[in-house]
Image 1 (cartoon, rainbow, N blue to C red):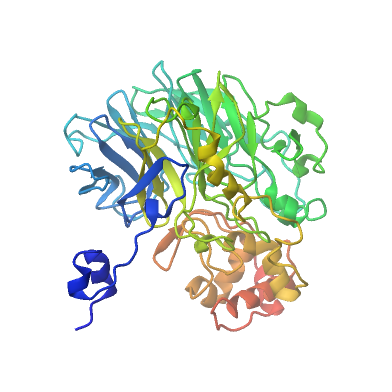
Image 2 (cartoon, one colour):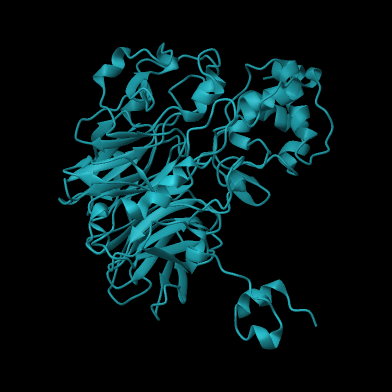
Length: 572
């Protein structure tokens, strides 16, 4: 009787001679590339609901915030009882939403004996009891985002705590660059931007008070578009953020920006956030290549004009555009080599919108710090998550780094958002001789397609002339739905084999003309990305691009005619 591949994986290398089965080689370090002296093991291969942020207790229980909360729970607890690095105990709990199987979670922190975590609108906490895997008390609500508009883009609620009992929470901007209508080519930004009153900044709250809303907080800083990566640095007692920069420079202003510029700009800004600081969103963005903050095109910028941007705070470092920094953790332990002491580890989840160039990021970086400032350039600390290079579309990546946590023994944990894999990384080398020689191979990884600055000509994946619906798709659609139409998990839905595309024509045309906000379910998965309105396209252009989508990506649906678009547009 033949032995199944699944069984082969289970037996690994147990008695291969007698079973006459060739063992599958297991990749070193769980497939990761690390500096010399570091080793990795897979804690858990996959968790169905997928893991975002994590935190670990002093007694070795790892808590992970699940992206999707359902009747099973919103949190996973993992325990390694035999100290082999792998979790033998995996329990789920903390269901705060049972009628729906999804949420947008962006926090997991332990503070003052409590486990804090968030959904897209609420920050919760459980009281922890040492030696207990699942918290025994009731789930408490610390803060609720009670805005009438409910969910919107950049709705994440990461949290950080200072040393004085304060909790910091960002309220992300509900738009890309404060345009009205939003994400519309050539549309100016509202000036002044009314969204800055209650969004686009960080608010400070009492970490120990329950039942708060934004009105109970204090507006600590402004001009900050979107935050997922945030941490308090206890060494210099400051809040730090790696901000998601704005999108769509080419799509919105093709008369100003090339595809190459749009792929690299604007910077993901690493910022030191102090009371009263203002980083200039939406009026300005940071250009890491010019090393200056410039005026946004919605406010009269041309990629070089500084204008009012000289009034705003600059970042301490600028990373290339669209790398998606999704966690930031300062290391304050003693067991890793000295170069990592008080430095910043950043999980770059990876780009979705770098077309026509390769997607970029998908690694964990490190920035050395001294006296509260970066003391050197950024480094590649952990790579290999994607499993491929070049990354053409997001779903080419096997794994994407999401969350970072340190254990009491200074072991490092990294979570993945694609399959819910978690790695544990430990240092087994000699910390006294660790230096640049141990980083040589990691420095070489900066030359790979998913990290290096792309060559404007050689790395263009869509070089050539396109016409009709294909040209419109590559201009306005491929940055989100990807070149292959497979979308991006949790954000932008796929276009292949879904009733949203091949079904009701009128519904599809309406979405193109009017856009769509909020969540939608496609083939059993929920997506939270915003679909901007495209009413600026002519009837013929709408018909052409929808026909292209309905007859490509494995679809075989009928064409859409300009007359159908015109009729529906006139009825709006």
